[in-house]
Image 1 (cartoon, rainbow, N blue to C red):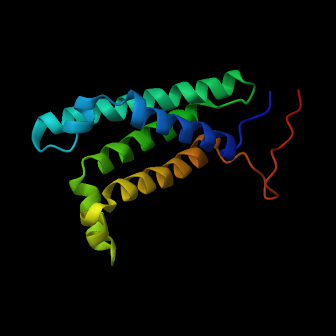
Image 2 (image 1 turned 180 degrees about the horizontal axis):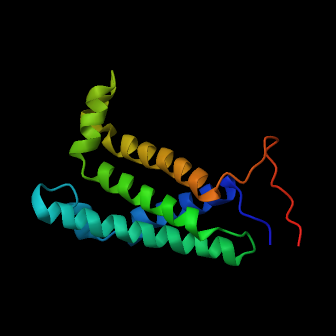
Image 3 (image 1 turned 180 degrees about the vertical axis):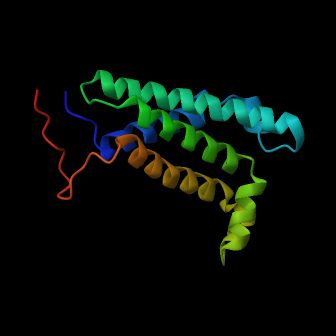
Length: 148
């Protein structure tokens, strides 16, 4: 079974991200995840956990389709992605980051928050895909040949 490439893994994580953020996330999680206090923290934690489960299922499907996914690096990648997702979806944290970058604070406040949110998540997915792939690409960008 060939090993999944970073591109294979990114595609699976990206698809799962879309499903998780728009179909799996509950209305209550979407409404409450940015609230201050424990109510917001718990809602965001539930959302991040559901996202991680959705992404784990996508990696499982990728593996079942014949592209080997190594579970140890995948677990590290999913944990890192879940933490970054939680961090961004608490909203005040992402808004603070936007204020630090020239021109982004106003954009965030003027309706750009959903776009900056998704762009942040997609960037983190790339990092997660690279972690989950375990660096299996060689310098030429090809998979090493496995010998039995």
